[in-house]
Length: 416
Image (cartoon, rainbow, N blue to C red; front, side, top):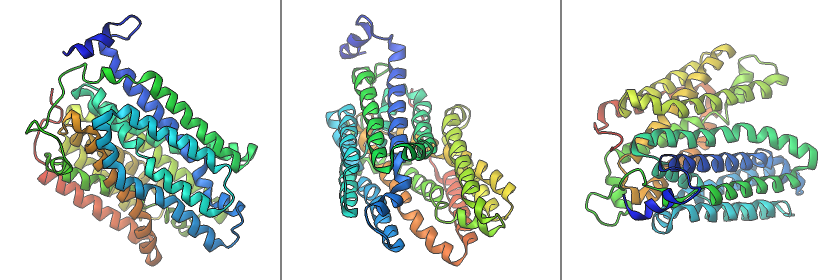
């Protein structure tokens, strides 16, 4: 153990070495939950806010909303690997603090915009400075001992899944009390608290106190090309893209499908919300329990099994009974959640410690690409038949399950 890691663990009032990594993971998890919750306080109500800025035509509202929502993940997908590499070079903590500070300022500025293009411009700038999501996963993965990496990743991803589940509820109540414009100040405060949590509780000196860092195979500088050559890495990118694509494909079509199967129009919004909440909650369970599954089964089996469960859930969505839709949502959520965390853990297990930022940045780009492309394709397919969307999802998940099970190279997931 290096002396730079001994000092923090022996200083008065500092937690014991065995608890330092847990404090780091909990800090990153709390900051992720606060950030994702804060973001969804206002973004689901962006169309209403665009209307308040003087846009009256429904088509124009939809256009401004769609472009404003899409520009941030689009730019983030492009820049996530670059921010990750900067984190590898200068430290991930300062990169996350940089991202959170920018969100505090930009979300507060949203409360003072007067034109729709102001919203678009601020969202574009957010895309340039975003990236704390992938960096948070990298920070959790690097802080935890190698055999606890899946649990650490799963905990952060659980927070990132639960935040959007409660954010709209809080945001709706907040907007009703103080108005949509002031609700952006509330979002800025959430990010500010997350910033304080990371600054105060995350200790970069504790990283790797549990063991030596893994180096790249050639002992040299890790490049993007090196990252893509890591064992199973490209396969995991494809799996993460597919899982995110399927997970986001239901937003444009599920409420329409709920009405098609005979639910009264007045109940469609509520019952659709119930299904989305079930998917979010069970997805969080899948993230949370993935670590236990990986202790009993190889990553190949967990990922393939989760994708197969997601395929089954997608197929059941086409049956047409609301009770079956509930069961399908549970199966989908658990399958996607478990497979997603297992995929990140499998990829993280082969990334050298000094390249976690770049590696997880590339994985995040794959995730964001699936997130950005899915609604467009699902909406296009849904124009012909909504059930087609579900069966395309079934096919994607079935192919990925078979591909992972047959081609994923056997390896020790976590190098102890």
